[in-house]
Image (tube, rainbow, N blue to C red; front, side):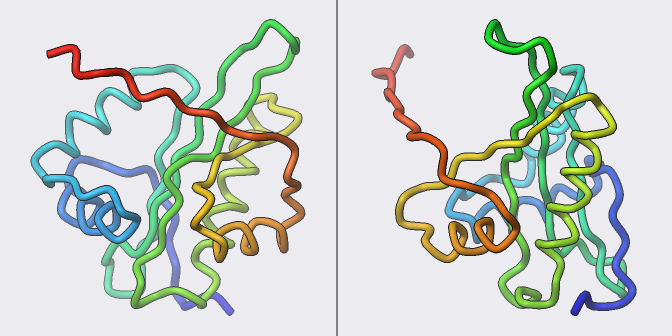
Length: 150
């Protein structure tokens, strides 16, 4: 059941403190002062959206980011769902499902025939969350961390 009322809207720099808190809960501690620049860079890239969920008091309780990009192997754009997190105090109320549904609708509206995501191996609850929403395990993500270029 979704907590009522729930409002989904584009993220703004005014959401910096809440987004910093949510990213910390996801395991990516971020100084709130960095968030406005990140939002600006995301919106400057065509085919990207950042959506937040506002609870009944106007507090930001969740965020999702979706990116579209062209590939060589497909004519249609590929959609990637990234950075989905719901405040730990508001989980289990349908907020994540609502954000995913809105992300999927946005991707379809922008011509993507499918949406993909990556999730760390230790996030087994997240894997179950996506599988109950008909996401399938179709590949493996490999990552290479570059040495400090500084």
